[in-house]
Amino acid sequence: MAIAALPLRIERSEAEVYRHRYLIAFAVTLASVLELVDTSIVNVAIPHMMGNLGATLEEVAWVSTGYIVANVIILPLTPWLAARFGRRNYYTGSIILFTSASFFCGNAQSLEALVFWRVIQGIGGGALISTAQAILFDVFPLSERGTSTAIFGMGVMVGPALGPTLGGWITDNYSWPWIFYINIPLGILAAYLTWSYVPEPKYKVQEDRGVDWLGLLFLIMGVGALQILLERGESKDWFESREIVIEAVIALFGVIAFVWHELTTPNPMVDLRVLRRRQLAVGVLFASILGFALYSSVFALPVFLQNYLGFDAWDTGRVLLPGAIATAVTMAFAGRMANRIDVRPVIAFGVVLFALSMRLHYHFTLETGHEDLFWPMILRGVGLGLIFVPLTGLAVAGLAPSDIPQGTGLYNLSRQLGGSFGIAITATILTRFREESREALRAHVTMYDQATRSWLDMMTQRLLSETGSVASAQQKAQAMLARIIEGQAAVISFEKVFFIMGAAFLLATPLLLLFRTGRVSGGGAAH
Image (cartoon, rainbow, N blue to C red):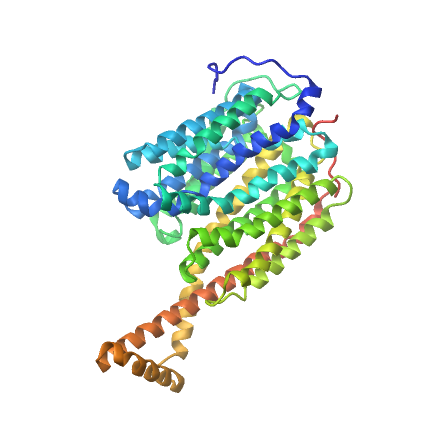
């Protein structure tokens, strides 16, 4: 990814880099937020795209799937690509690629063109998160690592929540191409700041020894097929579909072959040997569970609010905003203390707060209003803020500076895949739980039940004046009863899902005991 068109720049001294560290943090966090927002911003615009491009729901779903698949494939490759092209060159080039693809996405006149440019956009965006963390760990001294992680974490946590709200507002007030055009000025700013201020790493990068084409093939097969399977599984009824079975076989073969090849080849494209460090291995595992809980809740709550409580995208954003603010404030606090104490109890307390928030979610009803959602969002936000900064620091604690890019790449990949599994599982069990609850309610709400007959008679009398016909009034009353049953079944299904999210995260807490240390130490810059 050459960027020869960019002007030459003068290398800055270590003191200058340190002086501009917050400007660098702003640049790479801005780029990461753009990437994360674009993961979910298209979802609310899908109906508009279908009408404008003449596509079915299944066809237009590839606008989202293509982006995420490309993103996930590139994530583990970013350390190798950064070493090959130079980290500043690669990161700046990725922002330019992402921004250019955003323009062509907005300008697409066909579904095929839109999906193609979304894939290109995903390739550009895949580098922006893990490489950003590696840059921050180099630029900020170890004593300020918690602060840098907090700055970055605010964007990572706010991005997924901001996407649907921003997309809904832009689509309602302008048109769907503007959800892509909005990236252009911000992307140009991020690219300029990155090229101007981000330094190359002080440690010597590995010399280029050729391309591991076989490893790349296995990675595309394994991770790509797995992500497509997770994205399309629910709509295809999982293993009842031949497509899903084929994707599962390809994914299984690809992942096994990739792991075996990367561990045995002398020049791996993704150095999985770094996972021999227990600290990172445990962090990667815990990050996958964090991704499961975070992305599942971000997916499930807006669906509940908009489909069953009648909230629009803007109302949903107002509900999520207090939690995002709580996360930002908590991260700032957690960042300052991350280097001073054993952070494992802090992470455990954050998990407990998240589980408590999910317990409050468990009591949501069809009458739940804005005021009922405030404290569950605050608890969830504080909990995630207490988890993200310390967990990231623990995962890379003790890694040599040259290993940090590989560590952050695998850490972010695990969180992304955990989130994909979480969304896929959540979508599936919501459907199953709703069907089970509907049948259970129907078994108790029958014409043989005195309370049911009394309610139908009362509603029939109320509706008689509107319809003028007993038969029509009875039909409307029965339709109302069916809607009530459907609504209650949905509430029960969401309550169960929220409970599972909290319980799963809580059960993962003992993993904290597997960390060799609870102190954030080692690696990174040392000013």
